[in-house]
Amino acid sequence: QQQVKQSPQSLIVQKGGISIINCAYENTAFDYFPWYQQFPGKGPALLIAIRPDVSEKKEGRFTISFNKSAKQFSLHIMDSQPGDSATYFCAALQEGTYKYIFGTGTRLKVLA
Amino acid sequence: DAGVIQSPRHEVTEMGQEVTLRCKPISGHNSLFWYRQTMMRGLELLIYFNNNVPIDDSGMPEDRFSAKMPNASFSTLKIQPSEPRDSAVYFCASRNREGGTEAFFGQGTRLTVV
Image (cartoon, rainbow over all chains, first blue to last red; front, side, top):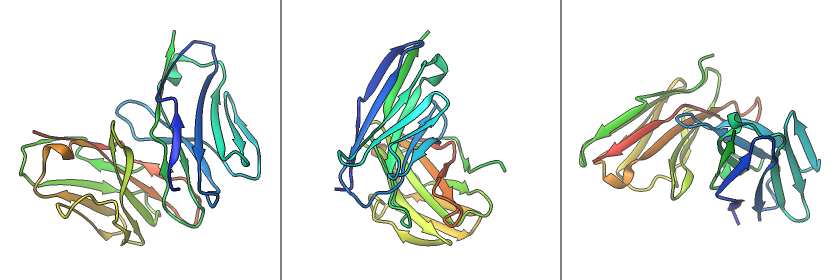
């Protein structure tokens, strides 16, 4: 029940295309859902996050779509660029607690 | 702020040796996490400190692993004796628990045990 399932494991997208990464969770107590971006040799860094009171959050080319009833959320990267090539992790947290539950990661490669 | 600082960035050691990884959290942050990242298991939480006190060490794989936080600005993760299966990237992260939910990660220590 504590797992966050992430798919796909890897993704190759042409420059200008849309990258979509999906995550699913079971624990309905989770109320904070961040996405982290990790470049090779670096630590994960917060990209964008959402709380379940909204169904979508957009920041520039990055959008989180959230489906509370299905317990799923996804990251959409519009107009994908080679500089977006990185590993993306979804996560879930119950605010007031400390335990981030991370997905297994998606390695995204955007072809020039 | 320089962010979370970890040292060393890379460590190669022989099986059986003691390894100590170091972390300096962001000033003012009162929560500190140690994570291990491998291809097989992704990001695993090893231990969590709040106000320098270990709250949850259930992720520490074995007694060979130990972690300390003697003050608010320094933490260590020690492996003694090290084994080849400990090879991974170890991340330290910190958070201001009262100031928000974002966890800030260091650049990690890549440990190779041969």
